[in-house]
Amino acid sequence: MIEEFIAWKDIYSVGIVKIDDQHKELINLTRLLYDACLTGTESGRFYFKKAVHDLVNYVAFHFSAEEKLMERMGFPGLPEHKKEHEKFVKKVLEDVKKFESGKAIVPNTFVRYLREWILTHIAKTDQEYGLYARMHFKQAAEEMVD
Ligand SMILES: [Fe+2]
Image 1 (tube, rainbow, N blue to C red):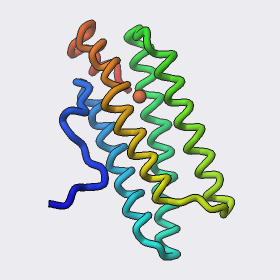
Image 2: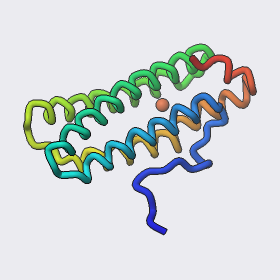
Image 3: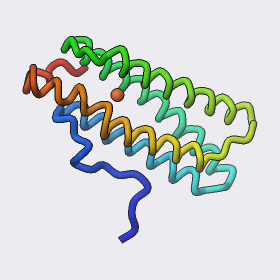
Image 4: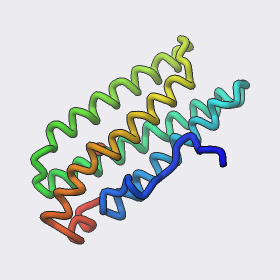
């Protein structure tokens, strides 16, 4: 079986269904971006551009939802977590800018960076507030997600 470029695994679950669903969508959008990378044509460039924008928009929505959840729960790791989000957004927006100004960015390197960051972040950093939610809020955390 051919291993997929990026796929959801149960070990990524933070124990909050709404957040897991958002992470699944994030993974989905990253896979679409990778697919667009594979087509080295003019239309491939168009799809790449669209896929980048979809991903960037969704990342903004998702990070904001996570940060609001952490704030509502009084999660002490929020400042650190927020910093990780901000660093990532900054780097991605810089790359997107390079891409839009026609400067060389290697789509493959870009999409591989996205994959590594997203999966590591979900598997490690997001687990911290997941654990906190299970300890202090149980099912109620579900209602705290936008
Ligand atoms: Fe996060």
